Length: 230
Length: 301
Ligand SMILES: Nc1ncnc2c1ncn2[C@@H]1O[C@H](COP(=O)(O)OP(=O)(O)OP(=O)(O)O)[C@@H](O)[C@H]1O
Ligand SMILES: [Mg+2]
Image 1 (cartoon, chains in turn red, green):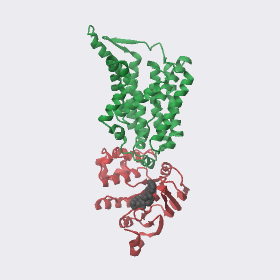
Image 2 (cartoon, protein in one colour):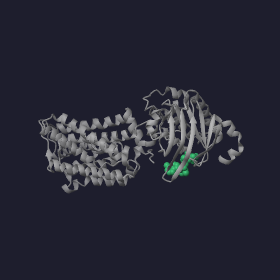
Image 3 (cartoon, helix red, strand yellow):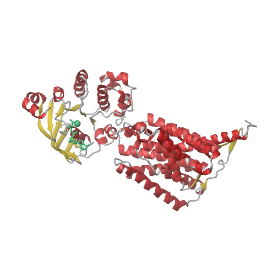
Image 4 (tube, protein in one colour):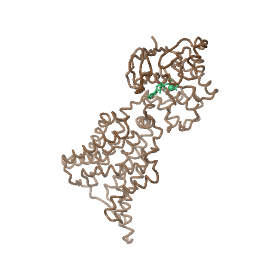
């Protein structure tokens, strides 16, 4: 059984339909990438899965249970964490407070485990998260998500604004995280980066999955990459 | 102090009266600023909640013979429950609407409450006279009513308590997070509908505490509702929206100003003091209203 199983998912905003029936599967310990051009609906897909964007039709199964239509906070409590676009840290709160809020629902107050994973944050604990560099903010957002010890984490735009060294650093961490039992769905406009760490990938175009499969196979298909990715 | 010129004594007395009244004003305003800052709701029913709690305290103690402290606590609980229900049942439905819609809802709720109180209790002034309501002591030539001193102590304790609670408790953290970024709060698992209602209930409970105190030390009638709402508005703007310690400082300042005005200005000007302070605040720091310094990171789509 997949950990996350999305079937025929459609949704949109007042302006019109955005997703036209998306299927997606994520298994335990897996890293899956969703790539596609700007405006193709990647963030909308993550939002529909996590409950931020209302689902129009289709199903979202988490551990076999249909969670489509549940409130975002209740889906989160079932073990699915969404690290959204632009990170959405609580800018006026310190890094420590942001981390504590990550563990709020589960009542976890021990930040030691995630600090071990992201030692850069140790010296920044009392800094307002809004004052962090872009890379540090991304680390903080991922660390905040991990505070809940989720079964699966959706990370939007994970490499945006990161210096290459920092991006590489995060990629290594992500592999560790997945190995530790948190499956990952990575969304990025930079397909090469996302596919370099993901085992499997989906290419989203205008709200439809136009291709999917092992990352290596997709990366080798130059015609496909030229056609759908910037 | 004995033998001091009476002009000095008068000034001291005005200052003391102002501080004591200001404590009460701070207590009235702190719940208002909390709700405004966190929920982005200007609660025009706030003054009505204050007066409702005053009536409930009065009725329970003077008519039903309950111990005044117990009466006050009961009034606070009732008003808090009412606040929770109002937010959960009505205001949550318009939480994402432009600010005018929640404003209209609270305006309507305030009118309804006020008219209900006129119908139930008439619009005559009331004053609760208890065994200890008249006791006071004198320092030099200055007169210190004991109950009013207690209301200042309560105001300082409660505003400090609210600030500490927001900072250090689980629900306080949730309230601040929701005030900053509603969606991000949901993504860390905070049940926003409940926390919204809880915040409003906390604001109402503070209004209730102020009302219970008003019943003990002051005079009130359904007409007072608008005055309390206006004063809360002024204090929130002056102290910084959502800033609870700012509300304490703003309340004390407004109390002192009004008392000094009462001493030295003709009567009709005294009631304009709150307006004058508001205008001055708007001219000097307009970001007080639009900038929302406390929760400026809030993103709501
Ligand atoms: N809150 C919203 N209200 C209305 N329309 C929206 C909203 N968010 C996104 N859209 C529209 O939905 C479509 C898909 O947007 P989405 O943000 O999901 O794309 P994306 O693939 O994440 O793009 P990017 O790579 O630029 O982040 C776009 O046409 C966008 O304009
Ligand atoms: Mg996006």
